[in-house]
Length: 117
Length: 118
Image (cartoon, each protein chain N blue to C red):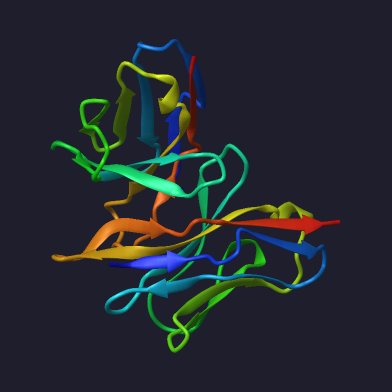
């Protein structure tokens, strides 16, 4: 079964410092990987995705993620964190069933990013 | 573009009553919408897949008679929590899949609906 793991419940970083939010995946076949962000009491906003092509994917708000096939990772990064980046971040992978790829996304447990001023 | 609207954002109801939550795709058509439930400080739990013009597909463990889903048009899906109880209190989020673009897995989410059952 497809799955993603976010090993950190919370990541703390000082404003201006680089940040990394970790995600590892387990899929059969080529993965479709995503990052979403959720602000308090709000829905999820799409940040970026990897389907194919360059391993370094650039997304919204200055975020980027690196697809690493050998390490089965898709870590989210930003060179310089902002206080406004503080939110809950979810990694997700497209589900693959017995009949092939589905339209469902499987989400990780989420990582709370706290950026201190 | 790709805006999904959920209504209501907040709802408080008495135990035993039913509550309807609407999910609308405002500027695109969606044959498929998904309903999630999120508990505090937890991930999203997929409840069901809503398909326009057909019955919803429920995930294992989700009571279909408890959580009624209707997808009557290409822009609207509704989730009705029937005979609500305090344990149904949660944050419900919908997402929609665009039909006019090649599928790449990206979903568009509503803002969520906070249900509190007294």
